[in-house]
Image (cartoon, rainbow, N blue to C red):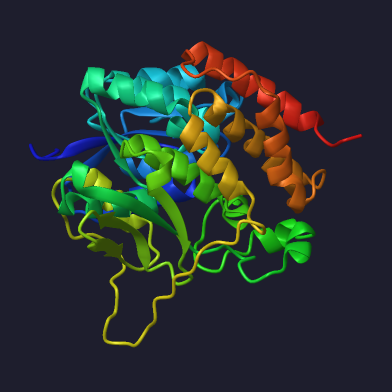
Length: 387
Protein backbone atom coordinates (compact mmCIF):
# COMPACT_ATOMS: atom_id res chain seq x y z
CA UNK A 1 0.00 0.00 0.00
CA UNK A 2 1.28 3.46 -0.91
CA UNK A 3 2.33 5.76 1.94
CA UNK A 4 0.45 9.07 2.38
CA UNK A 5 3.49 10.97 1.07
CA UNK A 6 3.77 8.80 -2.05
CA UNK A 7 3.21 10.68 -5.32
CA UNK A 8 1.69 8.93 -8.32
CA UNK A 9 3.61 9.28 -11.57
CA UNK A 10 2.70 8.68 -15.21
CA UNK A 11 5.72 7.94 -17.40
CA UNK A 12 4.83 8.67 -21.01
CA UNK A 13 7.44 7.19 -23.31
CA UNK A 14 8.52 4.69 -20.68
CA UNK A 15 10.51 2.47 -23.05
CA UNK A 16 12.77 5.29 -24.28
CA UNK A 17 15.97 6.49 -22.67
CA UNK A 18 14.35 9.11 -20.41
CA UNK A 19 11.47 6.80 -19.54
CA UNK A 20 13.76 3.94 -18.52
CA UNK A 21 15.84 6.31 -16.41
CA UNK A 22 12.68 7.66 -14.77
CA UNK A 23 11.63 4.15 -13.77
CA UNK A 24 15.11 3.51 -12.37
CA UNK A 25 14.77 6.66 -10.25
CA UNK A 26 11.33 5.60 -9.02
CA UNK A 27 12.68 2.13 -8.25
CA UNK A 28 15.52 3.63 -6.23
CA UNK A 29 13.72 6.21 -4.08
CA UNK A 30 12.27 3.99 -1.35
CA UNK A 31 8.56 4.21 -2.13
CA UNK A 32 8.35 8.01 -2.44
CA UNK A 33 6.84 7.58 -5.92
CA UNK A 34 4.51 5.01 -7.44
CA UNK A 35 3.92 4.36 -11.12
CA UNK A 36 0.30 5.10 -12.04
CA UNK A 37 0.63 4.92 -15.83
CA UNK A 38 3.04 3.84 -18.53
CA UNK A 39 2.99 4.39 -22.28
CA UNK A 40 4.91 3.31 -25.36
CA UNK A 41 4.42 3.30 -29.10
CA UNK A 42 6.31 0.41 -30.66
CA UNK A 43 8.22 -1.47 -27.96
CA UNK A 44 5.23 -3.23 -26.45
CA UNK A 45 7.21 -6.21 -25.17
CA UNK A 46 9.28 -3.95 -22.92
CA UNK A 47 6.16 -1.98 -21.97
CA UNK A 48 4.49 -5.20 -20.81
CA UNK A 49 7.54 -6.18 -18.76
CA UNK A 50 7.59 -2.75 -17.14
CA UNK A 51 3.89 -3.01 -16.37
CA UNK A 52 4.30 -6.42 -14.77
CA UNK A 53 6.98 -4.97 -12.48
CA UNK A 54 5.38 -1.64 -11.55
CA UNK A 55 1.67 -2.59 -11.79
CA UNK A 56 0.35 0.76 -13.05
CA UNK A 57 -3.39 1.36 -13.15
CA UNK A 58 -3.18 2.43 -16.80
CA UNK A 59 -1.08 1.24 -19.75
CA UNK A 60 -1.25 3.10 -23.05
CA UNK A 61 -0.21 1.67 -26.42
CA UNK A 62 -0.19 4.76 -28.62
CA UNK A 63 -0.04 2.65 -31.80
CA UNK A 64 -3.62 1.45 -31.45
CA UNK A 65 -3.42 -1.21 -34.16
CA UNK A 66 -0.26 -2.77 -32.76
CA UNK A 67 -1.61 -2.48 -29.22
CA UNK A 68 -4.82 -4.35 -30.00
CA UNK A 69 -2.87 -7.11 -31.76
CA UNK A 70 -0.32 -7.53 -28.96
CA UNK A 71 -0.71 -10.59 -26.67
CA UNK A 72 -1.01 -8.78 -23.33
CA UNK A 73 -0.65 -10.93 -20.21
CA UNK A 74 -4.05 -11.68 -18.71
CA UNK A 75 -3.42 -9.58 -15.61
CA UNK A 76 -2.76 -6.48 -17.75
CA UNK A 77 -5.51 -6.65 -20.36
CA UNK A 78 -8.12 -4.61 -18.52
CA UNK A 79 -5.59 -1.81 -17.89
CA UNK A 80 -4.65 -1.09 -21.50
CA UNK A 81 -5.79 1.96 -23.45
CA UNK A 82 -5.05 2.60 -27.09
CA UNK A 83 -4.01 5.48 -29.31
CA UNK A 84 -3.24 9.16 -28.68
CA UNK A 85 -6.74 9.67 -27.23
CA UNK A 86 -5.97 7.07 -24.58
CA UNK A 87 -2.83 9.02 -23.72
CA UNK A 88 -4.72 12.31 -23.38
CA UNK A 89 -7.39 10.70 -21.17
CA UNK A 90 -4.75 9.17 -18.94
CA UNK A 91 -2.85 12.47 -18.59
CA UNK A 92 -5.98 14.02 -17.04
CA UNK A 93 -6.74 11.23 -14.53
CA UNK A 94 -7.22 12.63 -11.04
CA UNK A 95 -5.07 9.95 -9.41
CA UNK A 96 -1.95 11.10 -11.27
CA UNK A 97 0.18 13.79 -9.58
CA UNK A 98 3.15 14.00 -11.97
CA UNK A 99 3.46 13.32 -15.67
CA UNK A 100 6.92 12.56 -17.01
CA UNK A 101 6.57 13.83 -20.59
CA UNK A 102 9.25 11.80 -22.34
CA UNK A 103 7.68 11.10 -25.74
CA UNK A 104 10.07 12.23 -28.46
CA UNK A 105 9.01 14.91 -30.91
CA UNK A 106 5.68 16.58 -31.57
CA UNK A 107 3.91 13.27 -30.85
CA UNK A 108 4.14 14.25 -27.17
CA UNK A 109 2.45 17.62 -27.60
CA UNK A 110 -1.20 16.68 -27.14
CA UNK A 111 -0.78 14.60 -23.98
CA UNK A 112 1.51 17.21 -22.41
CA UNK A 113 -1.08 19.92 -23.04
CA UNK A 114 -3.76 17.62 -21.58
CA UNK A 115 -1.66 17.20 -18.43
CA UNK A 116 -1.12 20.97 -18.26
CA UNK A 117 -4.86 21.61 -18.60
CA UNK A 118 -5.47 19.14 -15.76
CA UNK A 119 -3.12 21.08 -13.46
CA UNK A 120 -0.46 18.38 -13.08
CA UNK A 121 3.23 18.76 -12.44
CA UNK A 122 4.93 18.15 -15.77
CA UNK A 123 8.44 16.71 -15.59
CA UNK A 124 9.18 17.96 -19.08
CA UNK A 125 11.61 16.04 -21.24
CA UNK A 126 9.58 16.67 -24.40
CA UNK A 127 11.11 20.02 -25.39
CA UNK A 128 8.96 20.11 -28.52
CA UNK A 129 5.92 21.12 -26.44
CA UNK A 130 7.49 24.51 -25.75
CA UNK A 131 9.27 24.77 -29.09
CA UNK A 132 6.01 24.23 -31.01
CA UNK A 133 3.48 25.82 -28.66
CA UNK A 134 5.41 27.63 -25.94
CA UNK A 135 3.08 30.60 -25.64
CA UNK A 136 -0.02 28.45 -25.48
CA UNK A 137 1.52 25.98 -23.01
CA UNK A 138 2.67 28.69 -20.59
CA UNK A 139 -0.69 30.46 -20.81
CA UNK A 140 -2.55 27.23 -20.08
CA UNK A 141 -0.23 26.40 -17.19
CA UNK A 142 -0.92 29.75 -15.58
CA UNK A 143 -4.67 29.18 -15.96
CA UNK A 144 -4.66 25.63 -14.55
CA UNK A 145 -1.94 25.98 -11.91
CA UNK A 146 0.18 23.30 -13.57
CA UNK A 147 3.90 23.19 -12.75
CA UNK A 148 6.42 22.71 -15.54
CA UNK A 149 9.72 21.42 -14.16
CA UNK A 150 12.34 20.72 -16.85
CA UNK A 151 14.10 17.39 -17.19
CA UNK A 152 16.60 18.34 -19.91
CA UNK A 153 19.89 18.55 -18.05
CA UNK A 154 20.57 22.10 -19.28
CA UNK A 155 17.17 23.50 -18.35
CA UNK A 156 17.19 21.66 -15.03
CA UNK A 157 20.54 23.32 -14.31
CA UNK A 158 19.11 26.75 -15.10
CA UNK A 159 15.98 25.96 -13.06
CA UNK A 160 18.23 25.23 -10.08
CA UNK A 161 20.77 28.04 -10.54
CA UNK A 162 18.24 30.78 -11.24
CA UNK A 163 16.96 30.43 -7.66
CA UNK A 164 20.10 32.20 -6.47
CA UNK A 165 18.48 35.54 -7.32
CA UNK A 166 15.28 37.27 -8.35
CA UNK A 167 14.02 37.07 -11.96
CA UNK A 168 14.74 40.77 -12.43
CA UNK A 169 18.39 40.14 -11.46
CA UNK A 170 19.12 37.64 -14.26
CA UNK A 171 21.48 39.14 -16.85
CA UNK A 172 21.74 36.09 -19.11
CA UNK A 173 21.49 32.32 -19.24
CA UNK A 174 24.38 30.24 -20.62
CA UNK A 175 23.30 26.86 -21.98
CA UNK A 176 26.22 24.47 -22.21
CA UNK A 177 26.71 22.11 -25.15
CA UNK A 178 29.09 19.19 -25.45
CA UNK A 179 29.62 20.08 -29.10
CA UNK A 180 28.65 16.57 -30.16
CA UNK A 181 30.83 14.20 -32.17
CA UNK A 182 31.81 16.83 -34.77
CA UNK A 183 33.04 19.61 -32.52
CA UNK A 184 36.58 19.37 -33.94
CA UNK A 185 35.73 18.42 -37.51
CA UNK A 186 36.17 20.85 -40.43
CA UNK A 187 32.96 22.00 -42.11
CA UNK A 188 33.68 20.00 -45.29
CA UNK A 189 33.96 16.74 -43.38
CA UNK A 190 30.87 17.50 -41.25
CA UNK A 191 28.81 17.95 -44.42
CA UNK A 192 29.65 14.36 -45.48
CA UNK A 193 29.10 12.72 -42.06
CA UNK A 194 27.39 9.33 -42.01
CA UNK A 195 24.61 8.23 -39.66
CA UNK A 196 27.04 5.98 -37.78
CA UNK A 197 29.37 8.94 -37.19
CA UNK A 198 26.53 11.24 -36.12
CA UNK A 199 25.23 8.67 -33.65
CA UNK A 200 28.60 8.29 -31.88
CA UNK A 201 28.08 10.89 -29.14
CA UNK A 202 31.22 11.37 -27.00
CA UNK A 203 29.47 11.95 -23.63
CA UNK A 204 25.81 10.89 -23.56
CA UNK A 205 23.82 7.77 -24.41
CA UNK A 206 20.54 8.94 -25.95
CA UNK A 207 17.96 8.06 -28.58
CA UNK A 208 18.78 8.32 -32.29
CA UNK A 209 16.89 11.52 -33.04
CA UNK A 210 18.29 13.57 -30.16
CA UNK A 211 21.79 12.22 -30.84
CA UNK A 212 21.63 13.47 -34.43
CA UNK A 213 20.28 16.78 -33.10
CA UNK A 214 23.33 16.98 -30.86
CA UNK A 215 25.59 16.42 -33.86
CA UNK A 216 23.95 19.30 -35.79
CA UNK A 217 23.57 21.29 -32.54
CA UNK A 218 19.89 21.60 -33.44
CA UNK A 219 19.24 20.26 -29.93
CA UNK A 220 20.84 23.42 -28.58
CA UNK A 221 18.81 25.56 -30.97
CA UNK A 222 15.63 23.92 -29.67
CA UNK A 223 16.83 24.35 -26.08
CA UNK A 224 17.29 28.09 -26.62
CA UNK A 225 13.67 28.27 -27.80
CA UNK A 226 12.49 26.18 -24.84
CA UNK A 227 14.45 28.35 -22.38
CA UNK A 228 12.84 31.47 -23.81
CA UNK A 229 9.44 30.17 -22.63
CA UNK A 230 10.48 28.35 -19.46
CA UNK A 231 12.30 31.33 -17.98
CA UNK A 232 10.46 34.19 -19.73
CA UNK A 233 13.66 35.63 -21.15
CA UNK A 234 14.23 37.32 -24.51
CA UNK A 235 16.46 35.62 -27.05
CA UNK A 236 19.16 38.25 -26.56
CA UNK A 237 19.76 36.99 -23.01
CA UNK A 238 20.15 33.34 -23.99
CA UNK A 239 23.56 32.11 -25.13
CA UNK A 240 25.21 28.79 -25.95
CA UNK A 241 28.72 27.83 -24.86
CA UNK A 242 30.58 24.63 -25.76
CA UNK A 243 31.70 22.69 -22.69
CA UNK A 244 33.32 19.41 -23.68
CA UNK A 245 33.24 17.62 -20.34
CA UNK A 246 29.43 17.86 -19.82
CA UNK A 247 29.99 18.51 -16.10
CA UNK A 248 28.68 22.08 -15.95
CA UNK A 249 25.13 21.63 -17.22
CA UNK A 250 24.35 25.33 -17.56
CA UNK A 251 24.97 28.68 -15.89
CA UNK A 252 23.06 31.81 -14.89
CA UNK A 253 24.78 35.19 -14.81
CA UNK A 254 23.24 37.86 -12.59
CA UNK A 255 23.39 41.64 -12.99
CA UNK A 256 26.19 41.97 -10.43
CA UNK A 257 28.44 39.70 -12.51
CA UNK A 258 28.06 36.58 -10.35
CA UNK A 259 27.71 33.33 -12.31
CA UNK A 260 25.95 30.39 -10.69
CA UNK A 261 26.43 26.96 -12.26
CA UNK A 262 25.03 23.50 -11.63
CA UNK A 263 27.58 20.69 -11.87
CA UNK A 264 27.27 16.92 -11.97
CA UNK A 265 28.28 13.87 -14.00
CA UNK A 266 26.43 13.31 -17.29
CA UNK A 267 23.57 11.30 -15.74
CA UNK A 268 19.94 11.97 -16.72
CA UNK A 269 18.71 10.39 -13.49
CA UNK A 270 19.73 13.50 -11.55
CA UNK A 271 17.46 16.03 -13.35
CA UNK A 272 14.66 13.44 -13.40
CA UNK A 273 14.94 12.97 -9.63
CA UNK A 274 15.00 16.73 -9.09
CA UNK A 275 11.89 17.22 -11.24
CA UNK A 276 9.98 14.51 -9.37
CA UNK A 277 10.98 15.65 -5.88
CA UNK A 278 11.10 19.45 -6.27
CA UNK A 279 11.30 21.48 -4.04
CA UNK A 280 12.88 18.67 -1.99
CA UNK A 281 16.17 17.01 -2.76
CA UNK A 282 16.18 13.25 -2.29
CA UNK A 283 18.91 10.65 -2.29
CA UNK A 284 18.58 8.40 -5.29
CA UNK A 285 20.41 6.20 -7.80
CA UNK A 286 22.47 9.02 -9.31
CA UNK A 287 26.17 9.37 -10.04
CA UNK A 288 28.33 11.62 -7.87
CA UNK A 289 31.00 14.07 -8.98
CA UNK A 290 34.36 12.78 -7.75
CA UNK A 291 36.38 15.85 -6.78
CA UNK A 292 39.20 13.73 -5.32
CA UNK A 293 40.49 13.24 -8.88
CA UNK A 294 41.82 16.08 -11.05
CA UNK A 295 39.68 17.28 -13.94
CA UNK A 296 39.43 20.36 -16.10
CA UNK A 297 36.49 22.46 -17.24
CA UNK A 298 36.83 23.99 -20.72
CA UNK A 299 34.50 26.53 -22.32
CA UNK A 300 34.53 27.97 -25.83
CA UNK A 301 32.08 29.70 -28.14
CA UNK A 302 30.37 27.52 -30.77
CA UNK A 303 31.34 27.94 -34.41
CA UNK A 304 28.27 29.31 -36.25
CA UNK A 305 29.66 28.31 -39.65
CA UNK A 306 30.00 24.64 -38.69
CA UNK A 307 26.69 24.64 -36.80
CA UNK A 308 24.20 26.85 -38.68
CA UNK A 309 21.30 25.35 -36.71
CA UNK A 310 22.18 27.69 -33.83
CA UNK A 311 21.18 30.74 -35.86
CA UNK A 312 17.81 29.12 -36.55
CA UNK A 313 17.22 28.64 -32.83
CA UNK A 314 18.08 32.25 -32.04
CA UNK A 315 15.76 33.50 -34.78
CA UNK A 316 12.84 31.36 -33.66
CA UNK A 317 13.33 32.36 -30.02
CA UNK A 318 13.24 36.00 -31.11
CA UNK A 319 10.27 35.80 -33.50
CA UNK A 320 8.06 33.23 -31.76
CA UNK A 321 4.64 32.74 -33.29
CA UNK A 322 4.51 29.95 -35.86
CA UNK A 323 8.27 29.64 -36.35
CA UNK A 324 8.84 27.00 -33.66
CA UNK A 325 6.24 24.61 -35.05
CA UNK A 326 7.70 24.88 -38.54
CA UNK A 327 11.33 24.48 -37.48
CA UNK A 328 10.59 21.51 -35.25
CA UNK A 329 8.56 19.66 -37.89
CA UNK A 330 11.08 20.31 -40.64
CA UNK A 331 13.93 19.12 -38.44
CA UNK A 332 12.16 15.91 -37.42
CA UNK A 333 11.68 14.96 -41.06
CA UNK A 334 15.19 16.09 -42.01
CA UNK A 335 16.67 13.82 -39.33
CA UNK A 336 14.54 10.90 -40.55
CA UNK A 337 15.70 11.49 -44.11
CA UNK A 338 19.33 11.69 -43.02
CA UNK A 339 19.10 8.41 -41.11
CA UNK A 340 17.45 6.68 -44.07
CA UNK A 341 20.06 8.05 -46.47
CA UNK A 342 18.01 10.48 -48.58
CA UNK A 343 19.46 13.74 -47.18
CA UNK A 344 23.15 14.54 -46.55
CA UNK A 345 24.04 15.60 -43.03
CA UNK A 346 25.25 18.96 -44.28
CA UNK A 347 21.82 19.75 -45.74
CA UNK A 348 19.75 19.27 -42.56
CA UNK A 349 19.98 22.88 -41.38
CA UNK A 350 19.70 24.23 -44.93
CA UNK A 351 16.46 22.33 -45.46
CA UNK A 352 15.05 23.63 -42.20
CA UNK A 353 16.00 27.18 -43.22
CA UNK A 354 14.27 26.80 -46.59
CA UNK A 355 11.03 25.52 -45.07
CA UNK A 356 11.07 28.16 -42.33
CA UNK A 357 11.54 30.96 -44.87
CA UNK A 358 8.72 29.63 -47.04
CA UNK A 359 5.93 29.44 -44.44
CA UNK A 360 3.15 31.97 -43.81
CA UNK A 361 4.17 33.50 -40.48
CA UNK A 362 1.66 34.37 -37.76
CA UNK A 363 2.66 36.06 -34.52
CA UNK A 364 -0.22 34.79 -32.35
CA UNK A 365 -1.37 31.45 -33.77
CA UNK A 366 -4.04 29.10 -32.47
CA UNK A 367 -3.23 25.46 -31.68
CA UNK A 368 -5.09 24.49 -34.86
CA UNK A 369 -2.83 26.76 -36.91
CA UNK A 370 0.28 25.31 -35.29
CA UNK A 371 -0.85 21.75 -36.01
CA UNK A 372 -1.72 22.66 -39.61
CA UNK A 373 1.72 24.19 -40.13
CA UNK A 374 3.35 21.16 -38.50
CA UNK A 375 1.74 18.97 -41.18
CA UNK A 376 2.64 21.43 -43.94
CA UNK A 377 6.29 21.67 -42.89
CA UNK A 378 6.65 17.89 -42.82
CA UNK A 379 5.40 17.60 -46.38
CA UNK A 380 7.67 20.43 -47.52
CA UNK A 381 10.70 18.83 -45.92
CA UNK A 382 9.89 15.44 -47.40
CA UNK A 383 10.07 16.94 -50.89
CA UNK A 384 12.85 19.46 -50.37
CA UNK A 385 16.04 19.03 -52.43
CA UNK A 386 14.92 15.76 -54.01
CA UNK A 387 15.08 16.94 -57.64
